[in-house]
Image (cartoon, rainbow, N blue to C red; front, side, top):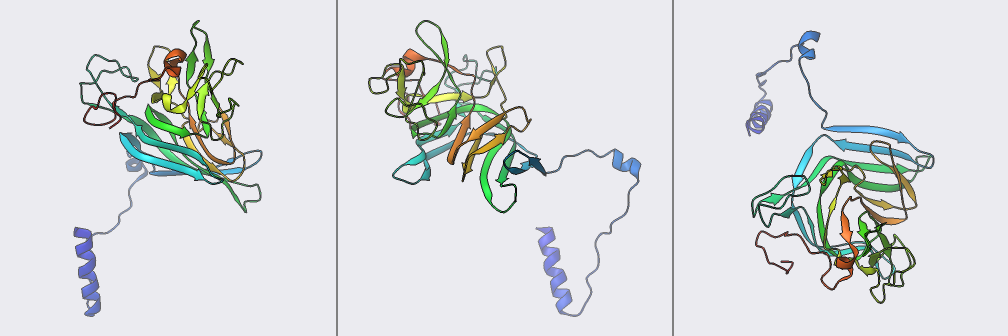
Length: 293
């Protein structure tokens, strides 16, 4: 407010032919004084070469703890369908009791928020080698972990949960269409891809809406969840090989919308395929029990 007031006063004096008085002046400081100053740029821009595209990543120097509810979202709506369609979307949740150890290893009093944690959000552009056309755009975080809840009917991308069958064998979850064809484009079901899945009968396969909540992150090895750097939402004009912020992984995203949700969570296959599915975490301030809101 003071800066605005001074600006208005200077404008008035100028119009009256008077020169405003300077309120401050810049003075040089020594190298020793500069050495005592530490800080981080609010935005960091970097160019990243790739075999098929050139990338420009703009990273914000900020950390976020949040809890977000979205009524519904549809992305990539074209050709009588959507690349992503879901309702009652939530990042983060609310503790139902004080004895449950949450994904971060902590307990929270009943009614306290268990936030979704996001460190250094970034925006990244992918261009063709000639630099004349934008091939893709994505938003993500250099580190992220927390719960994701939704009622999903169409999904393009990858959901990295592990499914445990009745014999205790673990399987990387596979996305399917309604005909039990494995796909990461407009999938409607999730299950195991060992030749036994039948999405029409619910055998080792369930609608995506049965996976009501899960936790994004990496395995700490002690039962808790660590941060992942591979959580992002991308929109591509063509296939793009996105690099992880640490350069360790390359994730190929096809044309259209692609959502990458890495997770170390293990889900019981029998529970997933049951009529109730994997229960939803509490995402509303008033606990509605088995209801969403």
